[in-house]
Image (cartoon, rainbow, N blue to C red; front, side, top):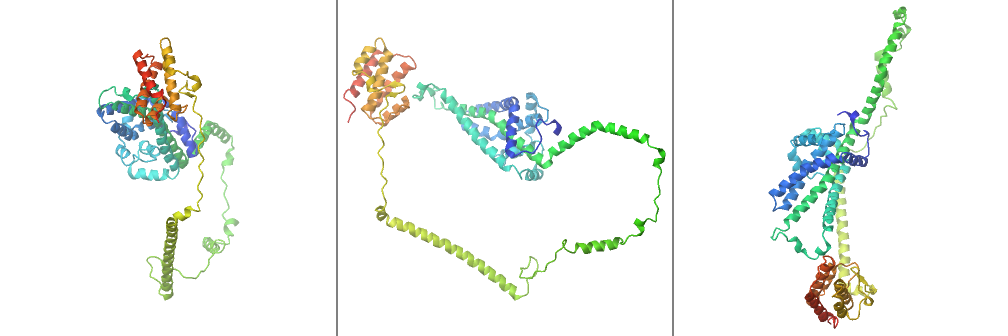
Length: 507
């Protein structure tokens, strides 16, 4: 690993900044990461689906459980790309099976639900540590940034759920509106297994969500691991010394050449040796020898401020392994201390019991005299809800009394030959208006056709429910599908209208 070739700035960072760096690193290599993940996971999902077609839940669980094996591929790509050796897609796919041989069994069993999986994955895959060596290594790495690694996994799990739910809602939004009322369009397979394809479609949506999120999750754990090693091993300081050595190496040859030229011009007599006199005052007039110096230093260290001896007398308990004191006063002191501790514990228990008795007595009195206490309780006056005006528009249609003719059926019969859409629209609008005015149904402007039918069904009137469903179906077929009902159908609808609304709602 050459730190000089690193594609990021090697320096200690806060844990959250290291996670941001992982997002940027995954974004830089997003094409290779997402494509390699898709080429590995999607064929595996297709194989599981083909083998377990009748058990889509088992396919989902097995595909999710094998995620630690898929995560080794993004880590392989990022670890090489970080130091300038980005592999190709073919090289990454060829090298990925070799990473699966390392500790695959622990990764799928007792380490599967670990919240720091992305943080510890580089230890077993890049450093190749296992057993006691791995445990010692993790004991050092996990002394910091452990909460950030856990938060990464928890936030990632919630983000997967949000993205998966969003994908389901996106698919649901493409379903035509007129099909919301009739679920029979889903029964095209014509057997009890009609829902299997929908379950497998949901599994596919989850696999597509992982293509987007999992490389980011692995990259964030990897940068968090690199940041921890940078702090422990001082990679930033090592890089500074390496750069300093590179700058000095360019000028070292010039300095050596200049020194050689200076030595060549130095006079020869300057190298002559000079003899020092043996009888030097520095050697003969020393007040202390080595033994006396050692004694003087020892006496100096035994005095303040180096040592401050202090004598303290008092009671103490014997240490483990030493015989107990023979004085009877020490024994009596220990016995009295144990007795005091027992008395304190008894006092605490008695206090808890008294508080529990007092609270229980208060609850009992309140329950016993609850009827008497109601005399002093002031009832809360409920304000009557303000009457709301009936809506004048529903489903984008005008349903106010002013927008409808007095003779509904006569107007429908007049409009039918040359404007059938307006005729059926008038009949549908009049039904909505009568539902509000005659049957007092709580319809709102935001209600859909389905909600209107649900409120009619809750009214518990079979004749009204049948007529409204029939009219709604023919109105939707004409409005959205441009399918004109027959004249007999119109006469049937007019007869139903006359039977239900000519004399108003039933009492």
